[in-house]
Length: 219
Image 1: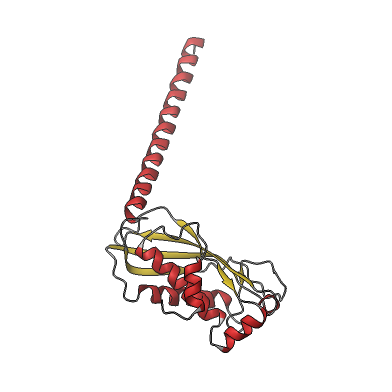
Image 2 (image 1 turned 90 degrees about the horizontal axis):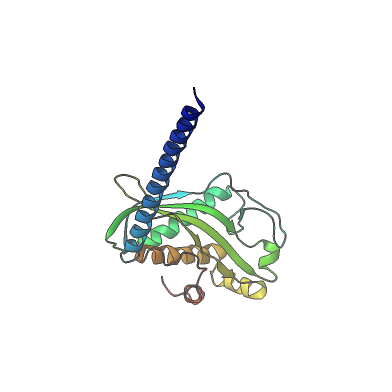
């Protein structure tokens, strides 16, 4: 093969490769743009929950250490010692049930919730300085027929300030346990997302939601 033919073949190969890359990036950009457009549309509507899928990955590390800030993805003392993954799955499911009660949306969707972090208070922290329930989960809305996402998956930060010391013990006497407060708080977060998708993205539990729980007001 002559030098000219080799050069021509190389240019042809590079050209085809560039076309393929351009075509792939164009398709990806179009797909992302479509999802973003769908997300913008969903923000103007409400969700009719056809099915709820709660996922608490077993890969999340559990810590039972009674220190001020133990290392772990899951730290939970609101239930008796046991399967923490199953306990949190039950809390998330109950919260969604409460959020769905009486709610009628316009856009049918499968709501998929995947827990990423549930770092609650240990005994040492709760009965001294108090702290924050640090809760993170991914929320995906899917088409009930195709399973395709209706919008990009969003991370929700559902943090909730928790009592400490004497105030924590007084709350317990009033029946405002950690489990009850967290369940109601998450129900409020879920309800906000069902009524206006995207409303809780990047936010923490708001003062309004927390205050409603502290005074025992219904959801």
